[in-house]
Image 1: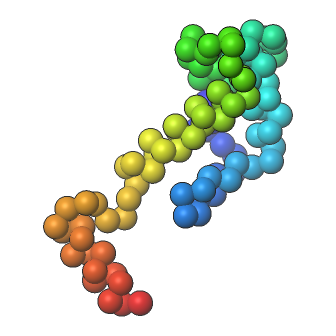
Image 2: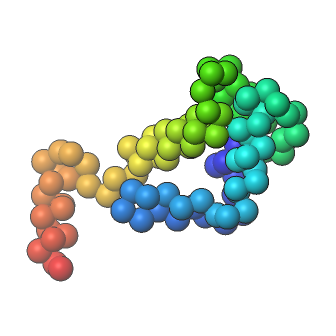
Length: 100
């Protein structure tokens, strides 16, 4: 799966930037999901098989994979906020802003 990387994925202001070396990997995942290829790196196979089960063959496989990646990043973002949406989190955010 994409969680196991040699290099980190950079996140800036909610925009994930994947390393260029993943471009070919993701093209292979899309081809696998669409049923046109069995060529796939082993670290992506479990995730690709999950995607293949939910893929609608009338759609664009590359876009489907891009949306699946976006969903993974969104899920990661949901749990890594610096300040939670609570009174304590809001107070911490205000303290942070006042220090700038």
